[in-house]
Length: 215
Image (cartoon, rainbow, N blue to C red; front, side):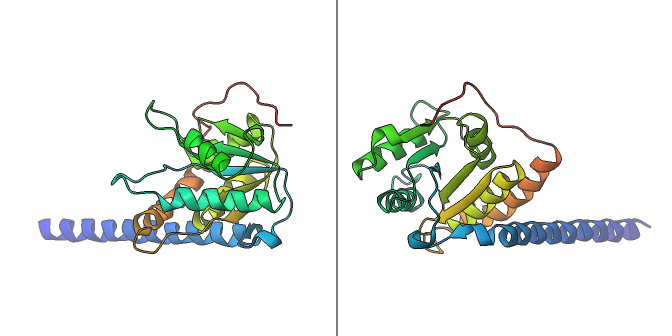
């Protein structure tokens, strides 16, 4: 009898694992498929859009080495600006600690590369992609944007934006090599599961706040 119960539990656990894998693959492929027509890899093909939403990340890795995700996103925004594809940039990232400020770090790098300070707007409460996207509309009044990040991130961000009534396209920053980006790519599967959970429970940004006018 005891052996039968153990076998039943194993079968049940196996079923749950299989169901999780199936749901994860479906979530990943759904977001990829729906976002594909709105994600661009060439500056020349990108439609002109007044405002870019640059999704934040840290300037350095835990090891102290430069973060390629960070610098590749900076280069992507600079390329768009220099080509006349965008006029303004909202930088949305994490500033939850006094010693960690993604938006300010990105702002300084953009200015170093010739993007005028008056064209840069900072969102310090972009703790998650959902927060960054929704706040872009609710705080900064933008319902048409071009999102800048790596492709895997752009696909998810565009999908979220469309859900919240934002007309969004995206421009892909150069990705990092497969070895360096392995953990990030693995986390992306779970992040896409979380998108649908957030939609189901109507999750809101952690903070909203006063409106910011973009000229």
